Amino acid sequence: MANPEVVISNYSSLEEENHYTFNQNTFSSEQLLLEDQMRQKVIFFFMNPCEKFRTQGRKPWKLGTQILKIVMVTIQLILFGLSNQMVVAFTEENTIAFKHLFLKGYVDVNQLDDTYAVYTQSDVYDQIIFAVNQYLQLCNVSVGNHAYKREGSEESPMAICQHFYKQGNIFPENDTFDIDSEIETECFFIEPHESVYIGTLEENKLNLTLDFHRLLTVELQFKLKAINLQTISHQELPDCYDFTVTITFDNKAHSGRIKISLENDISIKECKDWHISGSIQKNTHYVMIFDAFVILTCLASLMLCIRSVIRGLQLQQEYTKFFLLYYKKEVSVSDRMEFVNGWYITIIISDILTITGSVLKMEIQAKSLASYDVCSILLGTSTMLVWLGVIRYLGFFQKYNLLILTLQAALPNVIRFCCCAAMIYLGYCFCGWIVLGPYHDKFRSLNIVSECLFSLINGDDMFATFANMQQKSYLVWLFSRIYLYSFISLFIYMVLSLFIALITDTYETIKHYQQHGFPETDLRTFISECKDLPNSGKYRLEDDPPVSIICCCKK
Image (cartoon, rainbow, N blue to C red):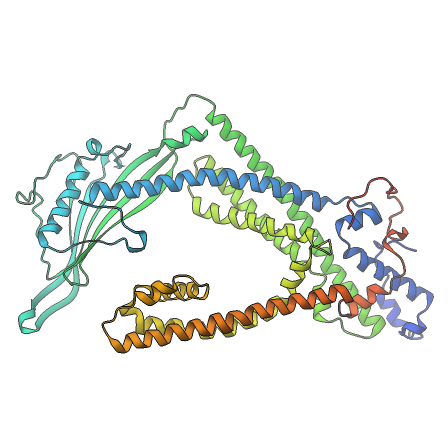
């Protein structure tokens, strides 16, 4: 019997021989030989690495590579996560420090309602003067290693800009107004070295005058620098940070309440002319060498998986042509997709993300780039996919592959079910936003409404959602009760229950199939007719050594 690596002989020559009748009962000996060869090739393709090792002695290179990659990628992610954690902590703490430094009377509040506002004209002037004074005295006030950013040979100044309507005459007592909607901007700059104190509100050395009837916003923008020295204790090179701080006084609503916000735009770059005594630089080189090994491992995994996918597609075409020629029947789409291994596609995507993320990590480690967010997304997603790929190897064992089979079988029905449920969900989102938005904080925007309703489906914040409804309008309050009760009843008692029932029904079906056999397809029927068992020796190449002592694994 020829081995399964032999490619099926020229089909066109068989098509020219009209005396052949392609019927299972009338196959010639040559046709039966070709059928057995094809059947063995298909069976060998669907074997797991352990079975391939036992039947043909083929070493499971992909399996070994994946195990090594899981360990290396996980270690790499942990190292990067610890480094990224210091970056996030440093940036967040600086933003909080700037709020306390430049916003007079600022206190830490709940992040869900981080609103800081003033209500009188004197408070607005007082806040601006306080921020300017703090900026001019920064080096004497701040406990951090902050400094003014230089642009060329000079320090960057603070820009104070006010945006206002070109013309605005408002007479609330007569219910009349005259507004020119064109927006004008006036700016002036304060150099850090000009003065160390600009005086009090009464002295008004800024010579700043605000027309609150026309005023839209006032912006104070300045640039600072700092060095993150905490990385030294973790054997890493420090980063140099540039902060672009913008303090905004928002009067667009003209409601008598001017909201104050502080935004901190951060960029990270390589420090210049640095010197550190010790072994930090050597440790950095070791980490970069480890990242290089991760890239090489992923490249090996990528090439092996791409080769397997190509072989699967080639075998699919070969099997399709064989089936059409011998059985006069088209191969179904589901049988064709059996030759496309989705796990290999997942591993290929994971390898590409890991290689790209590792290159970015090496650049960050060398202080050439500062794309922490992009690198985090790439490495985090790739590691997630790598660990999901472990399920594939558990699926080789019948007692552990129930989850995989259930997910595969339920996925099409789940997608269709979710599409239908999403229509109802979006309807409630739009309705809640337009009706309850003016009266409830959790319905202010579509994004917040969606998060609120999803929390309600999972049983979170139910009482708070009911209790926080403002009762300014009895009609809206009554509508909110009907809206919330109907949504909770519909989605928790019906939609969610049907969703769980869909998964449970698929789970029971898969358990029944495992006990009594899966439904027969053309591909399964074709494979089941093979009389040569995997341990019969029929699958072994002639130059393969016998396998008698070492066994990869057993089910």
